[in-house]
Length: 277
Image (cartoon, rainbow, N blue to C red; front, side, top):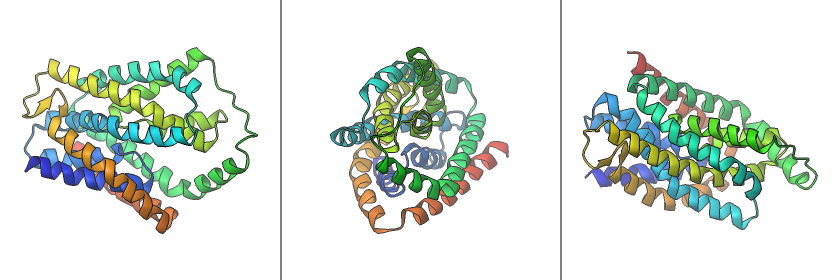
């Protein structure tokens, strides 16, 4: 029965990720939080399990996304090589930091993050569309002025730590970082997709390792990663993300993003309410 529930979550998360063009973590974490709560798991572990399991599922989706972007030549591998060590180390350490934060505080942190993502999606839709159109026209004329390798390594570390605490693949942070220094949107998104792989692997291993140190008393888990949830969500989201992307081309992307931002706002306030009450 548990596996069926997680297959349904994976189907919803994958479809929504493809439909709204956002990372699965912003959908998977809230859904897992609700399901784990209904299953009666300890409030001290629920948020950690949601974050760790979310990162584990991103391993599968990031491989699929990486391959698709690489075929289009949108992955800037030299930049990836500079960021990847910091991303991996930062995310592993971030899992350790998250393990030391109480479940209630994590709810508040993730709640604020979701509200921020909702705000960016609701008010940034037109600006993003215009930016993408401008990138298409100027793809070969953009001057990229990235910081030195040590600074990129440090930036990767910061993004990695934040990704672990939020349970995401880092796209919400990596894309703005790259576009700030002149990388066109298509290649920023493609490179971010590649960066999601070391984040997901290191984050999942971190939540497993630090979770085992705390001896989590939840069935079917390795540390803070729920195995059934990982399998169910990974399998279904891999297929339904493509379906969501097809539907997105039929409907208005701007209206879709605004609707999803409203949903994220509700979920964000829900986390804040649960954390404060």
